[in-house]
Amino acid sequence: MTFSETLSGAWQRNDSLLCVGLDPDPARFPAHLEGRADAIFEFCASIADATADLVCCFKPQIAYFAAHRAEDQLQALIAHIHARHPGIPVILDAKRGDIGSTAEQYAKEAFERYGADALTASPYMGKDSIDPYLARPDKGVLLLCRTSNAGGSELQDLDVGGRKLYEHVAELVAHQWNTTGQCGLVVGATHPDELARVRRIVGELPLLVPGIGAQGGDVSAAVRAGRTEKGVGMMINSSRAILYAGKDENYGEAARRAASQTRERINRYR
Image (tube, rainbow, N blue to C red; front, side):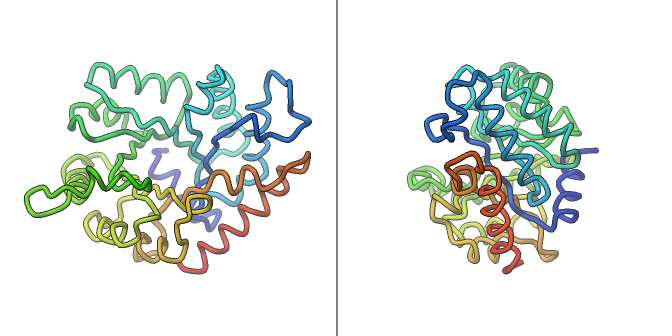
């Protein structure tokens, strides 16, 4: 199955638009994991096992693994999710962006080494830098459009021929680059008006929406702005609010409660 088909199935099967971001910070792990060589894998796998029936996807952020020389644990984690929870896609959050020949290596890294179902990437070097990802029609590529950080407006709000740059990116990706149906966009929940404009531009294109939870984005505003007419089309990411909901050995149960509450809040406005 393609990434788009797997994601659509997860939306329906789990009645969920929730994406759990896997951003492991060993300094915040429960004490019983301290000193374990596989602590990052164990922590993230437990979170995934506790929440898999509540989500539409998982999103490990590669920097949190690479900074601790834990790339092997990232690879094992994605394999674990695929084996234990088939039908839940994994997005590798790496925000890659480089010329085509280098992008080919990034594609191998994400899809062959790690086994991810989709990858986040930057569109700002043009379509030839995205082509190596599009050459794998079963995989997804989620391109930065209107990001959730405060400084994003410095570039993304620039006027480009009478429209803002992020609007141009949305139009370009949805109507020119997405020839194989693999593309999606990253649009922050902290900017619901912009999120609504992007949705009007792109139709039913899937949107990865970070910024709720610890980043303060309003769930109701984000869902109303970004959902499709069918009440889907979004992967609403929450990381820290779910990962670190518990402080002790029962952290998986605490994460499940937090994920369930977040899914319920999202579904209230679908």
